[in-house]
Length: 184
View 1 (tube, rainbow, N blue to C red):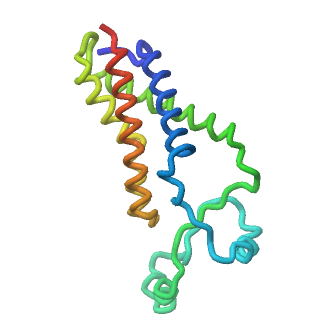
View 2 (view 1 turned 120 degrees about the vertical axis):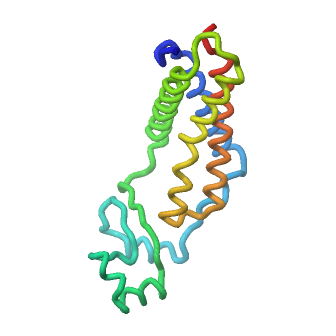
């Protein structure tokens, strides 16, 4: 067993590697360029949504689960639109703050991966053994929640598969860093 605290260097370096890779994927490559679309008649939609406080909403919204059996409610679902709406705070996105939170999240994932890998591997473990556990755990941490979003919140599947592939890249980078810097 290896303590997660003894793995501080692979934790930090893998967090940096994921941060850099995600920056390249999202800012320099065209991979995610068309992921989000504008709504038709954006100004009318913005005006209709004005005054809604930040939060998570669903359309149509059922006050009671039993309401789904009502013909008028079923008609709302059939006529559409149906969906989930996430309203953020009214502010210009502060990229510095968002990127800072993303980096802290990368550190948390790397720490959890270090903890998990450290339970299963002792000092001197082979590179590929460490790589397998660390990369798999990282891939799961970054990618698998998107599958739930597609199942439950209608996130388009093509976006989910892109995110799962991004997570695989993050996993391979993290597994490589952990395997390379694993204590002898």
